[in-house]
Image (cartoon, rainbow, N blue to C red; front, top):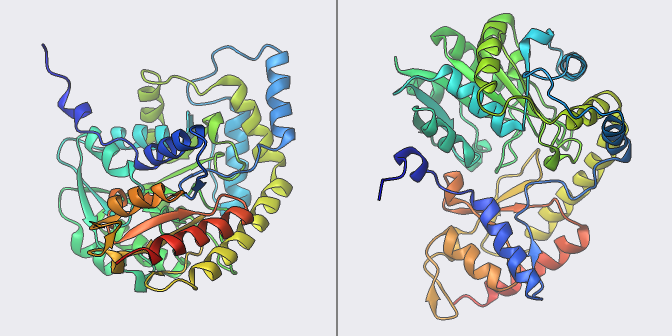
Length: 397
């Protein structure tokens, strides 16, 4: 029998999706499971967005579109960047894709040659290393600490850059830590990148989900020199509760956008036509709906942190954005649960799932001391889920 591709065989399946799938299996078996594993808003897509999609279907807008996106959607994306991020882009700078993952893949494939290094701060979204590897790049992981909110510093970045460094992946607000980089932190990072002529892929899909007076700043907005080196990736998924619609987009130098579009023409081609019309409606008329969701997430953010403060032996760095808490549970490692020693985050989450709570282990995010809890769920579930976690921890010996 012929061998399968080494590149494909080396890919590690998404831990978040596998945990969610296991939780779904238990629910179908009739078991009660509180899920803290989901990486998507629990709200329905706003009606005016689905109506725009229905209208597009009714008008027969079901054919191919330009590979890089409908002209109207590209214009809406440009307007969004100007309105929200103080960034001036033209349609030739924009590429619309089938979700942010697609944008990241096409962008990295378009800039990386075999052996090029990509700096990735820990903890990181689990997909980054997999895509870098598929594209032939080499991951250089940067250790961070909770005292600094799990953020890479300009000094660290400068020390890690070598002649092979091609790109930094920056995710703010961050999944899984919830950290948000300040403007001052970003300016210092930008100075280092510009001085070494290194790209930055800035993943900003959680940009609207920031709390307690913090604000999101796009590194591309900090001067023309860094803007030329920045690939801004975003999507309608988290902001407008449109995860299943699969619409992402990026902005970058026009010459690079042309290369990315050419690559996309041979992979996915255009994003789904009628989904694009829904995205136009979201970007142009979605402000009120976004504010309602942000208000709800802000309340949950405060509630979950207050509930976790009542648990002995766990700790966290206060998240300023996204909808996750990266909870350090390592003080329980080495102890026994139902007679079996729990040694790492995977074993912790596996046994926790047996107790009716689904969480995601931190190991795939680059930090085995922690687990990720999502508060994209109801306040009732937050109360019940944390109660179950407490009962679970009390059973450790």
